[in-house]
Image (cartoon, rainbow, N blue to C red; front, side):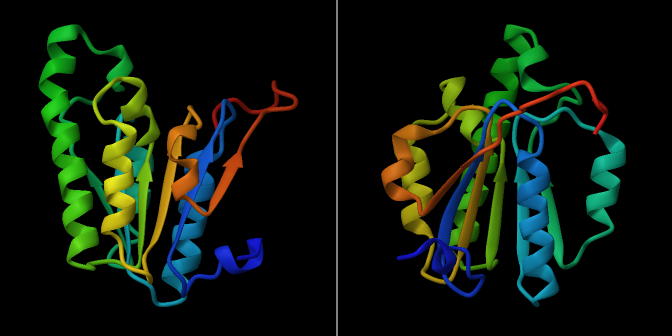
Length: 176
């Protein structure tokens, strides 16, 4: 299968956007907007993200075409939580993973973005096998997009495309 075929919106595929640079979520949301503009149903589930009300309210305005889900209760990013707070959030994060699997099995959406899901492996909250289980739960027409700082190399054999975002020069606008 060629790269052009992998990216077609009517075929099922699995993509990974990873790297140390900014833009992973932006690239995934861009793909979500493109799919929604083609009449596709899109779900975005965010993991390990700081709750930024301005970003969340913007994405909420894209409903019903793009539906955003967050299962974490804390407004801070997972990495900044105390050990007790992390223990509480782990169940919430697992609930998000269970919801993702339910969405795939019941074919509720055409595109499912799992934003920062690769970080769950870094924290030991999920395993590569858990992510493979999601990939295999999806049907041929569903497109999965995983993002995260780490590569998720353990699951590369199960995905169609891996895109690394690497900063080559920084210092322009660090707020974006």
